[in-house]
Image 1 (cartoon, rainbow, N blue to C red):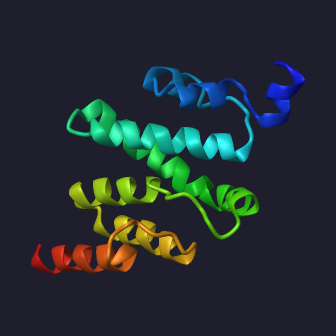
Image 2 (cartoon, rainbow, N blue to C red):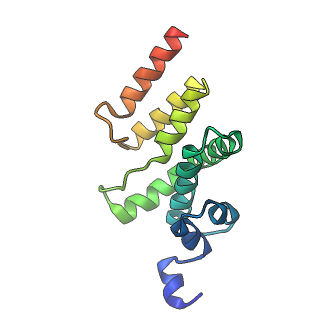
Image 3 (tube, rainbow, N blue to C red):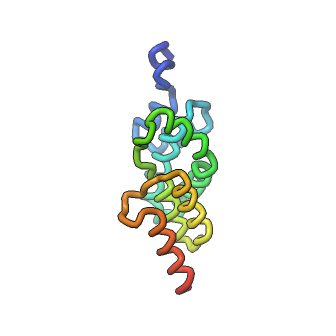
Length: 144
């Protein structure tokens, strides 16, 4: 790795998530990297496996990496806030993970994911935001 690549964090993890190649992204999940690269890698894996969630294999990958992301997000949050200040890019990992959990009937866990997103002031791009998601999940619990 050149000094420019190292300075900018352009390591194997960075190049894997930039590639958009799910297989490459999955191959570097165990490598050490900076927090921002790890965030974008996991978010990309979650996004891509979420799109393929009708296949059991990808659904399980989405759940696995959703859980990892959920656990690691507090570290990402600090680094992302340092870099982006108050103008964070949209964090889609929580949306995808919470939606998949809801689809699988894991309502309480989906609500926990939404509450964490709220605690970090994240926006899901909808009018009612994560609170609206929680309300909709609660309706599913009631009608269950």
